[in-house]
Image (cartoon, rainbow, N blue to C red):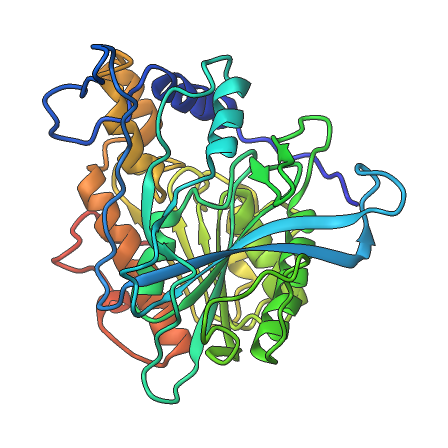
Length: 400
C-alpha cells in the first residue's frame, strides 16, 4: 500500500470543533429557540439537520462491505485484504416502510467524539433523506447513471451527503466509500476504525480504492452481489445500473483522487473536484470533461492546480463561489452554523470554518452545479447553468 503523506491544515481543527459542538448537545436545528429537555430535566440529545434534496424522487440507500482480494492489507496482518465500507444511494419507491438512514453510524459518531476527548453518547445521529434498503425506482427501461464519491483527509463517506442525496433524488446511483485508515468507518462485525495518523494515505491510495469500487459497480450491473457478507440488496438495484455512464467527484484529497482515477481508468467519463489541491503526482493529459469548484486551492494560489488545468484537453470549467473556504462545498457549511451559538463560537471563528458564503446559498450551489455537470456529460441534458454567470447565482464566478 502506498503511503504518500497528505494532511490538510484544517483537518484536526475541523474535526475537533465538530466533536466539541456535538459533545455539549449542540445538535440544534436553525431557528429552534432552545434545547429540548428530557423528563429528568436534563437536556435531551438533539439532532443536527440537513436540508432535503430538491429532486422529484424519494431516496434510498444501502451499505456494502467490500473486500478487495487482489490487495493484501499489511496493517491488518497476514491473510487479510483491503476492506472498505461503501454506501449506494439511488432513486427509490415505496419508501414508507423503510426508516431513514443516519448521517453516520452511532459507533462512528462515538469514535469522532472520543477522538476529540468528549463524551461518547452526547447526541443522536443526524438523519439523512435516504430510506434504508428501499426498492429502486426506474423510469421505464432506462438504466441509471452512476457517480462515485471520494472524501477528504481524515473524514468519512457521509461528509457530502447534501450533494449525494441531491443527485440520487434526480435519478442517479451514487456510491460513496470510506477510505479505511483515513476515515471514521464501522464494519458489520462491529469493528470501528478512526483515521490513523501513522498510516498516511495519498491520492493514489484513494484512487486504488475507487478503481476497486468501479469493479464492484460492474459486478452489480452484471447482476451479482459484491457484498462480502452476502447481505441482500435492495429490490431492483442490480438491474438498474448503467456501467457505461459513470462519473466521479471528490473533495480535497478526494478531488485529487478523482483526477487520478480519470487519468488511469477510462470507465469514468467525467470528473468534478471540490477544492482539490491536485498534487504534483497528478500528471498527464486528460481528454474527458473535468470541472473544478475551487475555494482555497485556486489556480492563482496553488501551482499544482494551475499546472493540472493546462493538461485538461477536453471540456473544462473552473468556478468559484465568493466567500467560500475549503469546506464550503459540503455538509459542514450547514452543520457548523447550527453549532456555533451553543459552543460560544465567535463570528470570527465561524467565518474561519465556513467563510462568508451564506449556508443557504452554499446548499443551492452544491445542489445545482454538480447536477448540471453530470446531467450534461452523463445524460447529454444541456441546460444553461454551465454556460456562464447566472443571475440566479450571482456569487459564482466563472474563472477563465
